Image (cartoon, rainbow, N blue to C red; front, top):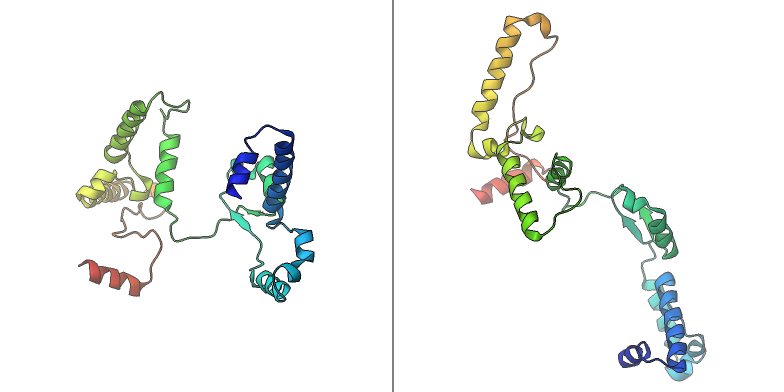
Length: 219
């Protein structure tokens, strides 16, 4: 069969053209419906194969999970375009812009991609070569680690956080705010900003039992 298809799509002749039309029709039907039936062969099923042919066929159909095929995606415009939606409907796929939570979602990776994309100087017209791309990413990484005051780190730089300087920096900020409030309390209707920082963060929140187990095996 592989040889017939390979030759049929390469040879230029009337017979080959007829074959290509037939094969394309069958493949299209398979892509849309998920199956193709040979009516004539089905009529001769018990004669060609055995008396249990239709019984086996029916059992196979019943064993298939008939849940609808759903494509989960984010809510960005490429996934909501009319052309894509029409294609999905044609293929019998249900589009969903409500992506379920999965274990490998990485909110931190997505956050750095957004920071990269919306930072001033982002090369929106692209880069000329792989060397230019590497140079740009190297500069971005240096800025991100050493200069960028990350809101998720209570406005520390990643370098301050990882090098252990964070506690001293945040303690100093807290002292400055407390002194300012003491000097002019009328300007403060509430408590000062919370300059504390979580010691641990999780990609997917764990229960206390899991945390204890992870700490035990890593110590």
